[in-house]
Image (cartoon, rainbow over all chains, first blue to last red):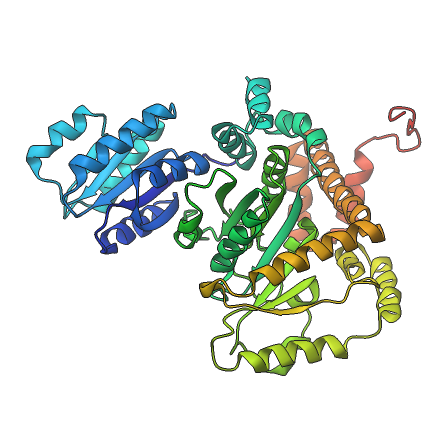
Length: 133
Length: 348
C-alpha cells in the first residue's frame, strides 16, 4: 500500500471574483505532496460541503476575501454537522479581522491564515490536523 | 464495518460511496472485500470514456453531456483523472471548476482522481472506482482521462464506449493517420466548432476514416494483431457493423450534446446486439484476472526466494556474468511449483 495521500478541497465561497490567493495555496499544497481538489470561484456553502462529501477529503480550505466569512462559515459548519462530517477540519484563509478569529474558532474552524502566512506553515498545519503529526 | 458500508453503497448513500472509493483508491484494507461484495451488483452501467488532448475541452464537454443525460432521466457518475506530479507526488485536480453547473443534482456524483504515477491516462485503481459507482446504481459513468497525447489508450480497455475529443488547429492531416489515440475512438467529437479551422478538422477526420480498410480487412488484421500478443488486443475493437461517427460540438454553448447522447445509445445497442459487449467484458475480465495473477505469483516468488539470492543474481547480470534471460529462467527453476496438477472442479 502506498503512503496515505492527504486530499484537500480548496474552494472560494461567496461572491468575490479574485482567486489568486486560493490558486497560490492550491499550488503550494500540490508541491507539498497533497492531492488538491480545486473547485474555483463563487461556491455556495452547499456546493462546498457536497464537493467535500463526494471527494471524501481530509481537509477543507476556504478562501474568503469578501468579508462574508461570518455568514458563510457558520452555514458551512452547520451543513458539515448535518452530514456527520465534523471530523473534517476547516481552515480559512484570506481577509479575516483578528477580532473575528475567536468567534470562528468557537464554531469549530480549525485555523485562520491571514495574508503573508508562509505556505509551508499551512501545509504543516494541515498535516498535523490530518495525521496528528 | 465493511458490510455496513457496502449495504449503504447499494442503497445509494453518497457518503458511503465516497468513503468506499477512498478505500479502493488507496488499496486499503477494505478494498478487496468491498470489490468482492459489490461485484455481483456491477456490470449494469454504461461506462463511457472521454479522452483527448489537454485543452480540447474534455471537462466542459463532460459537464454538458452529463446535463443532456440527466434530461433523459439517466443518473450519471463522473470520474475525472488529472496527473500526479512526478516530483512532489501531489496533484491539482481541477476538473470540478468546469463542473459547477452539476452541483446540487442528486443524480450526479463527481469524483476527482490523481493518476498516481500511472502513465496510460488513468490511475491504476480507476477501474475499481468505476465498479463502486456501477454498484451504487449510476446508469452512465463518464470517465475523463488525463489530457492525452498519442499513447494514453488505457481508457479503451476500461470503457464500453470511447469518445475521442479533437479540437481545431491541432495539426495537419498526417496527425490523423498516426497510430494511437484516434484508433481507440468509437465516437469522434470535434469540439470548439465555433473556432476557425473546425470544418477542416472534421473533413480531415472523415477522410482518415475513409482511408481505413474495409471492415473485412480490419477483422483480418484484428485477428493478426491478437495473435501478436495481448498488448495489441485492442486492434479487435473495430468490428463490422459500427461506423465511427464524426460529431460536431461546441461544449461551451451546450451545442451538439443531443447528438452525442444518441450516438452513445446507438453504440450501446450495437455492442449488445453484436455480442461485442460480452466480448469486451471477457477481454477486460481476462486482463484484470491476469494482472492479479501476475501480482500474486510475483509476491509468492518474492517470498520464496531469499533477498540475498535475488541480490546476487541481479549483481551478476549487472556485471555481465549472466544474461537476463538465463537469470530469469534459473530463478524460475528454483521455485518448485507443480503445474501439472490443475484441479478444474472448483468452479462447478
